[in-house]
Length: 146
Image 1: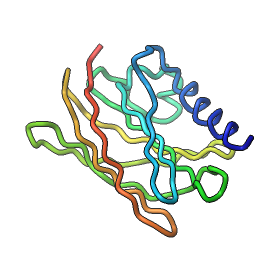
Image 2: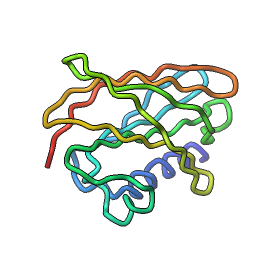
Image 3: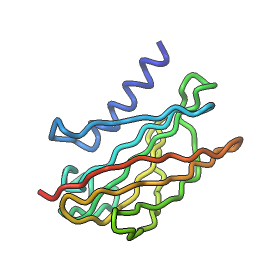
């Protein structure tokens, strides 16, 4: 039952950002102690009031990375972590990610901006440090402008 509640929390986060196109899908990666959910998208997917609330610049050339970290050993409860990393495009150009922690009730998630050009493919490498372990999240995303 608690796992179902955690799934609803992740869906709530997605609803919070008001994703409007079906091509946007959340993904996750399992680690020994964590389940890490992540998504990358254009900031224009956010409603203006949501972007303003979280100080996110809405632009067709500004991407948003959203990550939540769940403790598999504690009924998938959201946990605080320190996140750092970068995105690197196929030309080797790199941009650091600066994550902001957002807490809403029992939910904790992290957001970072990422500048991109149309149809740019970016490889993300993100270090996730919790109190007892460090994990590396790697994923690729292709950004599109509106």
